[in-house]
Amino acid sequence: MTAVNNESVLQMLKEEFTEAVMQSDTQYGMLSVEIPADRNTEIVGWLKSHSLINMGFLTDVCAVHYPEQKGRALVVVYHLHSWTKNFRMRIKCFLPAEKPEIATMTGLYNSANWMERETFDFYGVQFIGHPNLKRILNMDEMDYHPLLKQYALEDETRDDKVDSFFGR
Image (cartoon, rainbow, N blue to C red):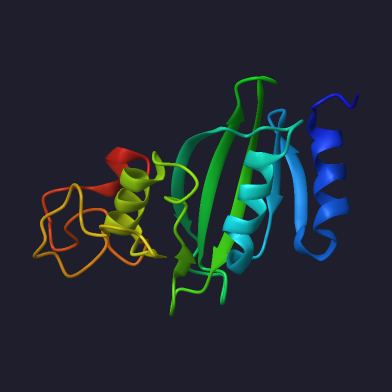
């Protein structure tokens, strides 16, 4: 019987999806694997249903915006947890800013519903097949996604602040 750890899970992933494991590393003891966005449900579904790995819990879905990376400006990050093996891992799927679309995980995990809505709300990621993809925290009238780094953090017209007082 194989132990469930970073090395064994990465090895099993590479054996099953040779070309789909695009990059991997370990950050703070957690395995991170980059996979193609168009195979997210296939690979995560395999991790969930695998009798040894059993990634039965989707801890988080979020996004990160890297505007300087052309064709890879947005990354959707999934944090998975196997309760039975006490093993956690991270899956990353990069998307172009021009068409940030990825298949929904709601068919695999009910918990993906609101997390995907939040990611859509703040980053504009379109989760294809989501049953109710609409804003969850911001007003429906907003025509932008506030966590994209193209927006200023504060009002740039203010002249009552001196940046040197704030370490800038």
